[in-house]
Image (cartoon, rainbow, N blue to C red; front, side, top):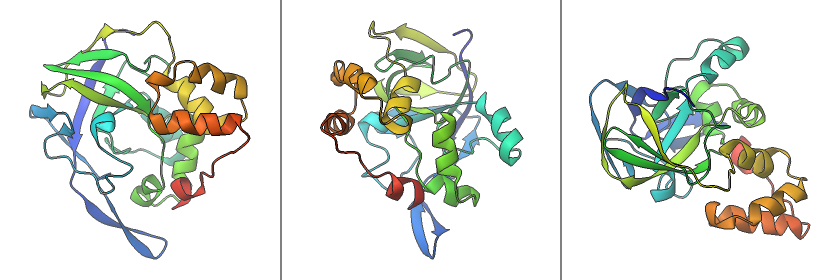
Length: 225
């Protein structure tokens, strides 16, 4: 990782989006700001989530999305304006394959800790009017990742992301995404992740344990709504 920094800081309020004949509440439509933003244990000041059961909370307080992915999306679906994926921080120099779960980054006066890769849901599709966008995002691995806030503070566009601590286990957000969402039959990798279950969301550790017992979860509701 070299010269990782924040390209954009964005927040949004909950709005209703149409999806398959109904309205869904979501804060995915965010707008960038050039002003410093306060960050607390539950995320950025002024940012909202429409579904607190599946978005937000201490372990998903701040969503980061690598700005490098926008070029690939432009080639597939056309130019997208930042922050197209509902991220709070659009970054440069920090990919899912770089970040280790539990790693700590200083940005502005804030300390962030990588908690989990983002699991795309159908609200991405509703936001952009592309029915299979959640599926395409999941398949691509260009998901972004969540952080918890270890030290509240303020940050602003242009702040550097400085690595403060990197756990020795080396399990990256990209690898967790691959095992949890894509290669769901890779039980060898599932066992390896479970040896470090303390770095996984508790629900994910339980899900992987169920897979080892032969039970595979259904992803349809999350991806298609």
